[in-house]
Image 1: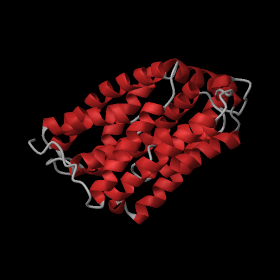
Image 2: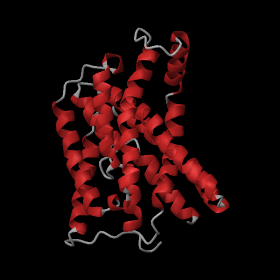
Image 3: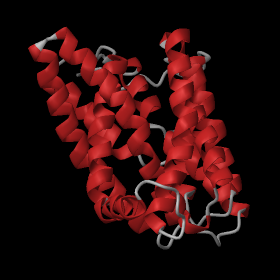
Amino acid sequence: MNEMQIIFLSVLQGITEFLPVSSSGHLILFSKFTTFPDQGLAMDVTLHIGSIAAVILYFLPTLWRILADLWLTRLKPNFSFAGNHLFYLLLVATIPALVAGVALKYVGTDWLRNTKLIGWNILLYGILLWLIDTWSVKVRNIQHLEMKDALLIGLAQCLALLPGTSRSGVTITMARFLGMERREAAKFSMLLAIPTILAAGLVAAYGLWQNGDVAQIHEALHAVGYSFIFSLMAIFIMMQWLRKWSFWPFVAYRVALGTMLLLDAYGIYDIRILNSF
């Protein structure tokens, strides 16, 4: 894999991971509509590690609050402490995706890297986000969430194992359905990405270490660095955008992209791009 491909993939990952447009779908589609070879699932996961590093830096005060409250409560559930409450919300919301991810390993993932599946998911889940975001009330913040709400968001996150769904998109959609404010929904979605993607990242890192390929490790380090930079930019832009506006630009993009992908997948229109690289 050359440096140009790593940079392109890092830009895609950084911009799309926390915007509700599906980073995994974009990473898979990149090789399908360019002359670059498919980078594979391991590189996809590596790119996500850079994004998680950006989330950790952006929400560092919140994470310190969680650690401080857990220390004060000695890890026991005590929801009068905001950080303790948030920790257990994230824990409950993480469990379904971990179970589903382990189950998917035994089923295999090659069948998921399919343009038709990605196209339908990008289109339909984009429309669902628009419907719920438009009609949902906006009164709850993270402190108002109960464990059953966290479980529902966690179950929704399992759907993101299907490329094109968007992990951030589907968790934000469920959070908005439960009445959360847009910025609060986005914040919880990003924090929820930390344990979920870190688990997958550790598995990928262990695979690289076992393989012992110096070139692959070098590529992975570059990918993490580039992805971190672009992810941090995307998080900042997204959180600023949601101060005043809704998710409609992302929905419009998903509808347009999903429609084009389906036209291509069914042989109606060829959208192959960047063939000169």
